[in-house]
Amino acid sequence: MYKNHQLSLSSCTYNLNFAFSPFLVSQRQPFSPHKRHLPSLVAVSANSDNHAGENDGGKKGSGTTARGRRLLKVREEKRKREYDRLHDYPSWAKVLESACKDDEELRAVLGDSIGNPELMRKKVEERVRKKGKDFQKQKTGSVLSFKVNFRDFNPVDSFIWFELYGSPSDRDVDLIGSVIQAWYVMGRLGAFNTSNLQLANSSMEYDPLYDAEKGFKVMPSSFHDISDVEFQDNWGRVWVDLGTSDIFAIDVLLNCLTVMSSEYLGIQQVVFGGKRMGDWEEGMTNPDFGYKYFKI
Image 1: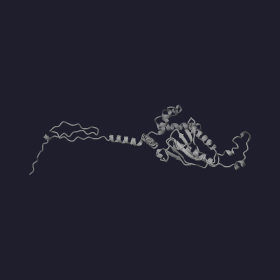
Image 2: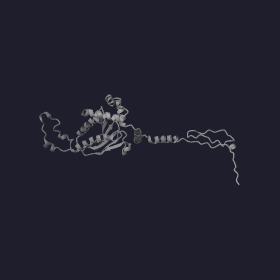
Image 3: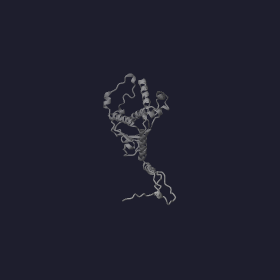
Image 4: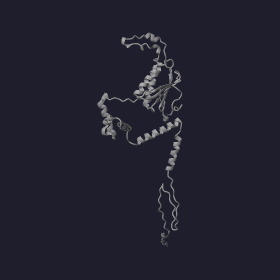
Protein backbone atom coordinates (compact mmCIF):
# COMPACT_ATOMS: atom_id res chain seq x y z
CA MET A 1 0.00 0.00 0.00
CA TYR A 2 1.33 3.31 -1.12
CA LYS A 3 0.71 6.58 0.61
CA ASN A 4 0.54 9.87 -1.10
CA HIS A 5 3.29 12.04 0.21
CA GLN A 6 3.16 15.75 -0.27
CA LEU A 7 6.41 17.55 -0.59
CA SER A 8 6.39 21.14 0.53
CA LEU A 9 8.63 23.47 -1.38
CA SER A 10 7.70 26.62 0.44
CA SER A 11 10.98 26.67 2.29
CA CYS A 12 13.03 26.11 -0.84
CA THR A 13 11.57 28.74 -3.13
CA TYR A 14 13.76 29.64 -6.07
CA ASN A 15 13.71 32.91 -7.82
CA LEU A 16 14.47 32.08 -11.40
CA ASN A 17 13.44 35.41 -12.87
CA PHE A 18 16.30 37.09 -14.64
CA ALA A 19 16.32 39.15 -17.81
CA PHE A 20 18.34 38.16 -20.85
CA SER A 21 19.49 40.60 -23.47
CA PRO A 22 22.48 40.38 -25.88
CA PHE A 23 23.36 43.94 -25.00
CA LEU A 24 22.86 43.76 -21.16
CA VAL A 25 25.53 42.37 -18.81
CA SER A 26 24.21 40.87 -15.53
CA GLN A 27 25.23 42.61 -12.32
CA ARG A 28 26.34 40.69 -9.22
CA GLN A 29 23.49 40.32 -6.67
CA PRO A 30 24.06 40.20 -2.88
CA PHE A 31 24.31 36.71 -1.45
CA SER A 32 21.18 35.28 0.12
CA PRO A 33 21.00 31.90 1.91
CA HIS A 34 17.47 31.34 0.55
CA LYS A 35 18.39 31.87 -3.11
CA ARG A 36 20.38 29.70 -5.39
CA HIS A 37 22.86 31.78 -7.33
CA LEU A 38 23.12 30.77 -10.95
CA PRO A 39 26.09 31.74 -13.13
CA SER A 40 25.62 35.03 -14.93
CA LEU A 41 25.20 34.89 -18.70
CA VAL A 42 27.11 37.43 -20.68
CA ALA A 43 26.28 37.79 -24.39
CA VAL A 44 28.78 39.28 -26.75
CA SER A 45 27.35 41.45 -29.47
CA ALA A 46 27.93 40.17 -32.95
CA ASN A 47 28.35 43.75 -34.12
CA SER A 48 31.89 43.85 -32.80
CA ASP A 49 32.90 41.05 -35.16
CA ASN A 50 31.16 42.76 -38.03
CA HIS A 51 32.90 46.05 -37.37
CA ALA A 52 36.22 44.28 -37.08
CA GLY A 53 35.61 42.50 -40.36
CA GLU A 54 34.69 45.75 -42.02
CA ASN A 55 37.82 47.42 -40.73
CA ASP A 56 39.97 44.54 -41.88
CA GLY A 57 38.23 44.56 -45.24
CA GLY A 58 38.85 48.27 -45.57
CA LYS A 59 42.54 47.76 -44.95
CA LYS A 60 42.71 44.96 -47.47
CA GLY A 61 40.81 46.89 -50.14
CA SER A 62 42.54 50.24 -49.67
CA GLY A 63 45.92 50.36 -51.30
CA THR A 64 48.09 52.78 -53.12
CA THR A 65 48.20 50.75 -56.32
CA ALA A 66 46.00 51.44 -59.30
CA ARG A 67 44.44 47.99 -58.93
CA GLY A 68 43.47 48.74 -55.33
CA ARG A 69 41.85 52.05 -56.23
CA ARG A 70 39.91 50.42 -59.03
CA LEU A 71 38.72 47.68 -56.70
CA LEU A 72 37.38 50.24 -54.22
CA LYS A 73 35.65 52.08 -57.03
CA VAL A 74 34.05 48.89 -58.35
CA ARG A 75 32.81 47.96 -54.87
CA GLU A 76 31.25 51.39 -54.41
CA GLU A 77 29.48 51.17 -57.78
CA LYS A 78 28.14 47.72 -56.94
CA ARG A 79 26.88 49.03 -53.60
CA LYS A 80 25.07 51.87 -55.35
CA ARG A 81 23.51 49.56 -57.93
CA GLU A 82 22.29 47.24 -55.18
CA TYR A 83 20.79 50.19 -53.32
CA ASP A 84 18.96 51.36 -56.46
CA ARG A 85 17.73 47.83 -57.12
CA LEU A 86 16.28 47.46 -53.63
CA HIS A 87 14.48 50.78 -53.87
CA ASP A 88 11.79 50.33 -56.47
CA TYR A 89 12.26 53.65 -58.25
CA PRO A 90 13.59 53.78 -61.84
CA SER A 91 16.98 55.41 -62.29
CA TRP A 92 15.80 57.30 -65.38
CA ALA A 93 13.10 58.92 -63.26
CA LYS A 94 15.76 60.10 -60.80
CA VAL A 95 17.73 61.58 -63.70
CA LEU A 96 14.67 63.47 -64.96
CA GLU A 97 13.91 64.84 -61.52
CA SER A 98 17.50 65.99 -61.11
CA ALA A 99 17.48 67.63 -64.57
CA CYS A 100 14.32 69.56 -63.74
CA LYS A 101 16.26 71.68 -61.26
CA ASP A 102 18.17 73.41 -64.08
CA ASP A 103 15.82 72.92 -67.04
CA GLU A 104 12.66 75.03 -66.98
CA GLU A 105 11.29 73.50 -70.18
CA LEU A 106 11.61 69.96 -68.83
CA ARG A 107 10.03 71.05 -65.55
CA ALA A 108 7.07 72.43 -67.48
CA VAL A 109 6.74 69.19 -69.47
CA LEU A 110 6.65 66.97 -66.38
CA GLY A 111 4.42 69.28 -64.39
CA ASP A 112 2.80 67.53 -61.42
CA SER A 113 3.92 64.08 -62.59
CA ILE A 114 7.18 64.28 -60.59
CA GLY A 115 7.27 61.39 -58.17
CA ASN A 116 5.10 59.19 -60.42
CA PRO A 117 7.43 57.38 -62.88
CA GLU A 118 4.63 55.99 -65.04
CA LEU A 119 3.01 59.41 -65.46
CA MET A 120 6.40 61.01 -66.11
CA ARG A 121 7.07 58.53 -68.91
CA LYS A 122 3.70 59.23 -70.52
CA LYS A 123 4.23 63.00 -70.45
CA VAL A 124 7.69 62.73 -72.03
CA GLU A 125 6.39 60.39 -74.76
CA GLU A 126 3.53 62.79 -75.46
CA ARG A 127 5.98 65.68 -75.74
CA VAL A 128 8.14 63.76 -78.22
CA ARG A 129 5.10 62.88 -80.37
CA LYS A 130 3.97 66.49 -80.49
CA LYS A 131 7.35 67.91 -81.53
CA GLY A 132 8.03 65.11 -84.00
CA LYS A 133 10.95 65.97 -86.30
CA ASP A 134 11.50 69.25 -84.49
CA PHE A 135 12.58 67.44 -81.35
CA GLN A 136 16.25 68.38 -81.05
CA LYS A 137 18.87 66.28 -79.34
CA GLN A 138 21.20 68.11 -77.00
CA LYS A 139 24.95 67.85 -77.39
CA THR A 140 26.55 65.36 -75.07
CA GLY A 141 30.17 66.40 -75.69
CA SER A 142 32.42 69.04 -74.18
CA VAL A 143 32.35 72.77 -74.82
CA LEU A 144 36.12 72.86 -74.27
CA SER A 145 38.72 71.84 -76.85
CA PHE A 146 41.06 69.02 -75.88
CA LYS A 147 44.84 69.35 -75.55
CA VAL A 148 47.23 67.66 -77.97
CA ASN A 149 50.72 66.56 -76.90
CA PHE A 150 53.54 64.63 -78.58
CA ARG A 151 55.98 62.56 -76.50
CA ASP A 152 58.70 60.93 -78.60
CA PHE A 153 56.10 59.85 -81.13
CA ASN A 154 57.32 57.23 -83.61
CA PRO A 155 54.82 56.89 -86.49
CA VAL A 156 55.67 53.21 -86.99
CA ASP A 157 55.69 52.11 -83.33
CA SER A 158 53.80 54.22 -80.80
CA PHE A 159 50.66 54.47 -78.70
CA ILE A 160 48.02 57.13 -79.11
CA TRP A 161 46.38 57.94 -75.74
CA PHE A 162 42.94 59.44 -75.01
CA GLU A 163 42.01 60.94 -71.65
CA LEU A 164 38.25 61.23 -71.15
CA TYR A 165 36.33 63.11 -68.46
CA GLY A 166 35.11 59.86 -66.91
CA SER A 167 34.98 56.11 -67.40
CA PRO A 168 33.43 55.40 -70.82
CA SER A 169 30.18 53.50 -71.19
CA ASP A 170 29.86 50.63 -73.63
CA ARG A 171 28.34 53.07 -76.10
CA ASP A 172 31.31 55.41 -75.72
CA VAL A 173 33.75 52.54 -76.31
CA ASP A 174 31.91 51.58 -79.49
CA LEU A 175 31.90 55.19 -80.67
CA ILE A 176 35.63 55.78 -80.21
CA GLY A 177 36.49 52.32 -81.51
CA SER A 178 34.40 52.82 -84.65
CA VAL A 179 36.15 56.11 -85.40
CA ILE A 180 39.61 54.53 -84.98
CA GLN A 181 38.57 51.54 -87.08
CA ALA A 182 37.31 53.74 -89.92
CA TRP A 183 40.54 55.77 -89.77
CA TYR A 184 42.59 52.57 -90.04
CA VAL A 185 40.56 51.21 -92.97
CA MET A 186 41.02 54.47 -94.90
CA GLY A 187 44.76 54.37 -94.22
CA ARG A 188 44.96 50.73 -95.22
CA LEU A 189 43.42 51.67 -98.58
CA GLY A 190 45.98 54.43 -99.16
CA ALA A 191 43.87 57.48 -98.28
CA PHE A 192 46.66 59.35 -96.49
CA ASN A 193 48.94 60.04 -99.44
CA THR A 194 49.99 63.66 -99.95
CA SER A 195 51.67 62.76 -103.25
CA ASN A 196 48.28 62.85 -104.92
CA LEU A 197 46.36 65.88 -103.68
CA GLN A 198 45.29 67.22 -107.06
CA LEU A 199 42.14 68.97 -105.81
CA ALA A 200 43.40 70.31 -102.49
CA ASN A 201 44.56 73.63 -103.91
CA SER A 202 42.16 73.80 -106.84
CA SER A 203 39.19 76.09 -107.14
CA MET A 204 35.86 74.32 -107.46
CA GLU A 205 34.27 77.25 -109.28
CA TYR A 206 35.60 76.30 -112.70
CA ASP A 207 35.05 72.53 -112.81
CA PRO A 208 38.58 71.36 -112.00
CA LEU A 209 40.10 68.42 -113.87
CA TYR A 210 41.28 65.29 -112.16
CA ASP A 211 44.01 63.23 -113.81
CA ALA A 212 43.14 59.65 -112.90
CA GLU A 213 46.17 58.34 -114.79
CA LYS A 214 48.48 60.46 -112.65
CA GLY A 215 46.77 59.28 -109.49
CA PHE A 216 47.19 55.67 -110.62
CA LYS A 217 50.92 56.08 -111.14
CA VAL A 218 51.62 57.68 -107.76
CA MET A 219 53.53 55.47 -105.32
CA PRO A 220 50.84 54.05 -103.00
CA SER A 221 50.95 54.52 -99.24
CA SER A 222 49.47 52.14 -96.71
CA PHE A 223 48.68 52.01 -93.01
CA HIS A 224 50.52 48.89 -91.83
CA ASP A 225 49.09 47.76 -88.49
CA ILE A 226 46.98 48.73 -85.48
CA SER A 227 45.98 47.20 -82.13
CA ASP A 228 42.59 46.96 -80.45
CA VAL A 229 41.41 50.10 -78.66
CA GLU A 230 41.79 49.55 -74.90
CA PHE A 231 40.40 51.41 -71.89
CA GLN A 232 41.25 51.47 -68.20
CA ASP A 233 38.97 53.84 -66.31
CA ASN A 234 39.10 57.21 -68.10
CA TRP A 235 42.21 56.44 -70.17
CA GLY A 236 42.19 54.78 -73.58
CA ARG A 237 44.98 53.86 -75.97
CA VAL A 238 45.68 52.30 -79.36
CA TRP A 239 49.03 51.19 -80.82
CA VAL A 240 49.71 52.16 -84.45
CA ASP A 241 52.17 51.54 -87.25
CA LEU A 242 51.37 54.13 -89.90
CA GLY A 243 53.68 52.41 -92.37
CA THR A 244 54.09 54.53 -95.52
CA SER A 245 51.08 56.74 -94.75
CA ASP A 246 51.90 60.43 -94.49
CA ILE A 247 51.59 62.38 -91.25
CA PHE A 248 48.56 63.89 -92.94
CA ALA A 249 46.79 60.90 -91.33
CA ILE A 250 47.26 62.52 -87.89
CA ASP A 251 45.45 65.66 -89.05
CA VAL A 252 42.55 63.55 -90.31
CA LEU A 253 42.29 61.71 -86.99
CA LEU A 254 42.39 64.93 -84.95
CA ASN A 255 39.68 66.47 -87.12
CA CYS A 256 37.44 63.47 -86.42
CA LEU A 257 38.17 63.49 -82.69
CA THR A 258 37.51 67.24 -82.45
CA VAL A 259 33.94 66.92 -83.70
CA MET A 260 33.32 63.73 -81.73
CA SER A 261 34.51 65.42 -78.51
CA SER A 262 32.32 68.45 -79.12
CA GLU A 263 29.14 66.66 -80.18
CA TYR A 264 29.13 63.29 -78.45
CA LEU A 265 31.92 62.41 -76.01
CA GLY A 266 34.16 64.89 -74.21
CA ILE A 267 37.92 64.34 -74.45
CA GLN A 268 40.39 66.10 -72.14
CA GLN A 269 43.56 65.42 -74.07
CA VAL A 270 45.13 63.31 -76.82
CA VAL A 271 48.76 62.23 -76.42
CA PHE A 272 50.86 60.81 -79.27
CA GLY A 273 53.67 58.62 -77.93
CA GLY A 274 54.57 57.82 -74.36
CA LYS A 275 54.78 54.45 -72.63
CA ARG A 276 52.38 54.96 -69.73
CA MET A 277 49.68 57.48 -68.83
CA GLY A 278 47.65 58.02 -65.67
CA ASP A 279 47.06 54.86 -63.66
CA TRP A 280 47.52 52.56 -66.63
CA GLU A 281 48.67 49.11 -65.54
CA GLU A 282 50.12 46.69 -68.08
CA GLY A 283 48.45 43.29 -68.22
CA MET A 284 45.38 44.43 -66.29
CA THR A 285 42.56 43.08 -68.51
CA ASN A 286 39.93 42.29 -65.88
CA PRO A 287 36.57 43.98 -66.60
CA ASP A 288 35.93 44.18 -62.84
CA PHE A 289 38.79 46.70 -62.61
CA GLY A 290 37.41 48.99 -65.33
CA TYR A 291 39.01 47.39 -68.41
CA LYS A 292 37.15 47.58 -71.72
CA TYR A 293 38.22 47.19 -75.33
CA PHE A 294 37.03 47.52 -78.93
CA LYS A 295 38.13 44.85 -81.38
CA ILE A 296 39.60 46.35 -84.59
